[in-house]
Image 1: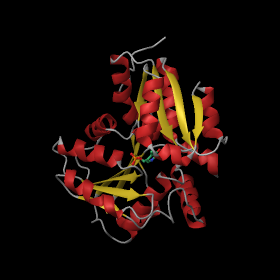
Image 2: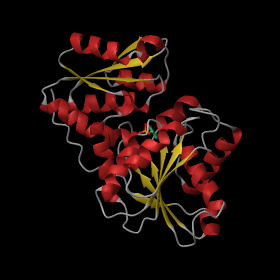
Image 3: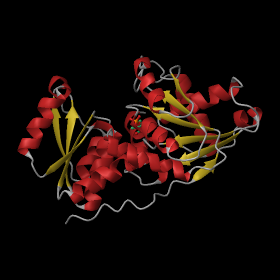
Image 4: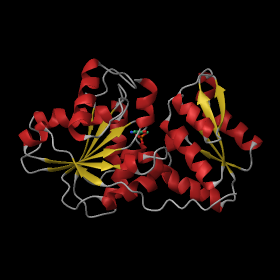
Length: 293
Ligand SMILES: *Cc1c(COP(=O)(O)O)cnc(C)c1O
């Protein structure tokens, strides 16, 4: 039975993280715990699903089809949200058939998985046309929830930030979250400086698209991808471990570990004046931590 995708205000509190490096820099670091909104529909994936799912409901679509790699947090969020609100879900997975905890959970939530070759996956136009013809009752949600409607949901997060925020940090994958935060800031009287931490290598060409949208300062950081998407190093794992040990907050190695490592590095470099108020968005992703350690 289809149910209206309620998406009530998520439980995503601000939590202060006090660490030797925040004390040394004399700044306040708050973590926006978007990871706590739901065990599986978490972080920016929750924000990005809200409006597309409401659109599906309004258009009388009973089926959600979406796309992702085998470790996609978005696939899992869609599977869990589909189950919660009564939609049939299909996940189109890039590459040869594999299994891992994320895909296992997707299946437990009733998602049907279809593995397709990288070449077929890349040809989005053909793929979308085929799916639309075959499943007229379905709404197609782009990979990562990266859509204008997705960004609308992310923009709402800005209203939950303290007025005194000086700097706001987010990891950047597709960039939909950063675009959403820029839109959210444009619509409010917030003046904070936005920082996007790229978790992929060699993405500079996209930087100007963010600047073009923004009415305030936004800086893209390219020094914290650790060699590329999902690449790690012993240093990153040591950092994740010490952050968890000192705060009780777990960070994944694909996104949030790299984002927070950037915050620490910038603090230690003295980039932010004493008394600054920093907010780092924790966008979840802990399923990836379980899958890959
Ligand atoms: C998807 C994801 C991101 C990246 O978000 P984009 O909107 O694609 O830039 C960051 N952190 C986590 C935990 C994610 O799952």
